[in-house]
Image (cartoon, rainbow, N blue to C red):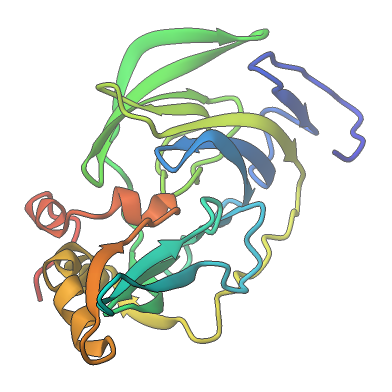
Length: 279
């Protein structure tokens, strides 16, 4: 962290909050620890924000694809050939851009179809989430956070936010709250959780441009969600058709490591909630 004239510390695990002014600034950088089914130990994510724009990405994300399709071929006694296809994806390979000026949200996503990896930059309108503000409060050091709830992309979340820091973007695709999110946890025993570890609030902070893989294709979120939701039905057939003659595909496991595809896996639920259209 850079040095500032005024400092305030909060205690939330290893949370260190360093700010120029708690009441005036709406730009800077926040660090989160993110937990999910594929990353129970957690990974670090970075949120750069301004009053009109934000960039959220895993600490290890660079724009160079690290997700890989791994194919293993083996022959049993009798000469029968089997092929196992699997995807290995770092949990922190996530990148989300929220652009208030353009009214658009963009994010990196990938999926395997027919044994091949396809990469995308999905886009959708930037809509404020429908938050339910509660009367609950929670102490974080010397500060009192307010409670909120939402249902977003098929999951329900409990959130604690700090109105004294006017940041309405992030982490991930969360937006629309009148203050910085200190913690967001999936309800009903869910595993997704975002915990603020540190923040640097600075006037005039420049939000970096997002770097997406060069071969990533730009598509609407509803198109991506449709293919992702339907891919399991034809994945084995596609992979089998592309396998060498006589070989049998015994398993095709799409182990998406990123939170993006895990959260947005149900296209029908998105349509029912009005999050996307079927056009």
